[in-house]
Image (cartoon, rainbow, N blue to C red; front, side, top):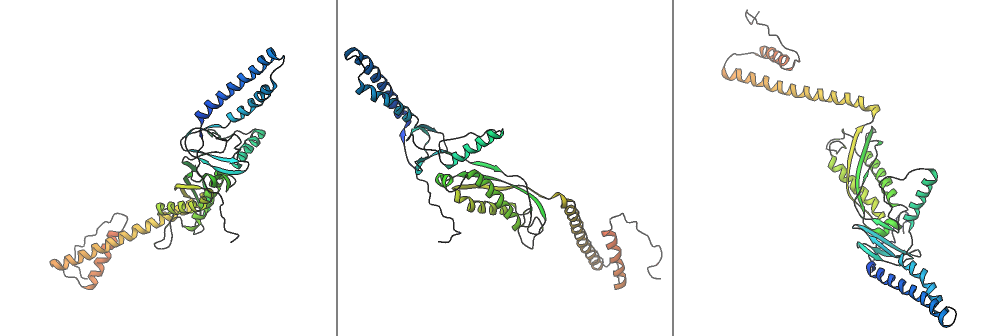
Length: 334
């Protein structure tokens, strides 16, 4: 096997667990029965033999913490939420059905929760606040809802080496909970890091707005660039069990240090394009004027007079300032 090839041994297995409502009724009933047994062992034992019935008293005492531990196996799942079942380090499956459930109370926290709690403890010691609006799921719960990553502006070089600012928004969701939990250290950080890396790589592959002939550019081919970004992100994030629903550029501009120079270049190109259009139109109009004069026999011009007329018409049509005609009252010939 190639050492550079990354393989995953973890794949999600969907399992079902017991109904939480049924187990709650049974456990509460068992707890009440155990309390009754505890009271009976004491009262009846004292009345009959002068001491509690130890053969009933000891099991009743032992069953109290056992039933309390069994009650901790109750859990709920909201729509688009899943729980990964991990028993003594071994993956047992994933529950995806929303509702009230009961599972083995010894299902432990996985690496994602351990990392999250460690981060919260470190932030508490440093006096930092956790992100507002973040609801800690706990107990190996993973949200399956679509999430939006609004990336920060990155300063990178495009294909031509020009520094640009670029940012993107990525809509993603967890598809395989086992891969997200066990194949990467923290899938949320993994998505953030890979999104930034993919965006930097994409910017290096395309020119900002002046590529070669028939070449896609970041500015002119937004749909194609967004599709390429999504494809690259999907390839990278598939290792973490993440599906990319959409990836799109949200910001694109030249870096401040070259923005003015690029603006002057764009203005110069606009002036050149306008001049080309004006010249093409003037040539067409001169050609039409000469043909109309010849066809209608208004005047017969030799080559020298045609050249003079063409020169005058081109000056009139291409000049940016107002032209003042000069009326010649004498003969055309010296």
